[in-house]
Length: 287
Length: 235
Image (tube, rainbow over all chains, first blue to last red):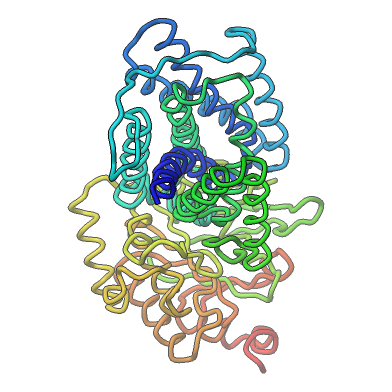
């Protein structure tokens, strides 16, 4: 019983940062129609912001994490301008360009920090007990930050004119243009938010994962599984699928092992695709 | 003239969809463009809105060239376009759809007034303001698309096939709405396959055939024209 509850608490932590990553990926795809293969490396960059600013330069952790959000968001803006905008009419080229870009990011980080693990001492070693389960403050911070950021994103999308514009553009870019909504402006907003969320996910989890320049790889595979299960294009679906996947993966890892958990995760995706090809919350093909 | 098309040409790859079309829309009333499928009606409206690039000719609005401008800039100048197939945002609520129509406007009080006005004109939209647009009937979606266009406080309204796929009762309703909009001082460019309805509503008409203006004149005259009767009015 204790182990079950402890595992559930661990799953909540995994769900929270995976949600941030998956939501960003869905947002970028929704608005620009491009699969950002470099999304895992944006997560990695966020982690290295903390390696640099917090572990090496001794800035406060939260400041370093916030810097991760902003810096990676700006990298997102650069990607939009340099790759996705010129390739807008050809989503496949955008995908290929993002693969090239992820290699560049990896290489730059190797050049700057070496290929070995960056050690990030946790800002706090304290932990609390939640009905018998142990939850470190660092993990609690990730969970709370993810909830706050997703709530802020939700409010932005539902309550502001740029939020409506972004959703409208994701649903029908041409009809949105006829309302005066600029594709370029919307793409920049989506790219900044999407990249920034991946960045802060990496930044907040850096003390827990010991970053390497290659951590983006497993992250992008997981994120793809999540957005396919959730239904490509659905933000709510991405969050729910992240929670679902995190629970399944964490439980299987705990009670069997990590390799089996990966297999189960992929099997889950396969099962969803067989039963509902558009994912759990995906819309039918739009005309 | 409020809106003028001068000898415009639009090509899709090698094929010319519009081969030198000229039209003029005055500052009031309804101008209709009728013609068969593929004659270039929709392309004409898309060219005005900046969704298609011209390969020749020019489009002037308020005596300034607008061809080559981005669609959002053309909306800003006051041209609202209700596209073919309505194209409401399916996963936005009715009210959110309407508010996207006012995207370029800043004055909150004025936007609220426009929203109240649209709800006034379309009570059904008011009843459904929190519903997803996807859950509405074709006629309601058409009203929503028109309402959304009105939310931009347009100086001219382009309507592409508003009667498409609607029941006869709803077609009557749309006809009433179009007349009402024009009666309130917003000139309308009406593209229709339903030539009978279009010619009854409009004051002036253009007949497009394979990308060229085959015929133009006061709508009444065209309604009595032999060629138009045979080709578009079923005898």
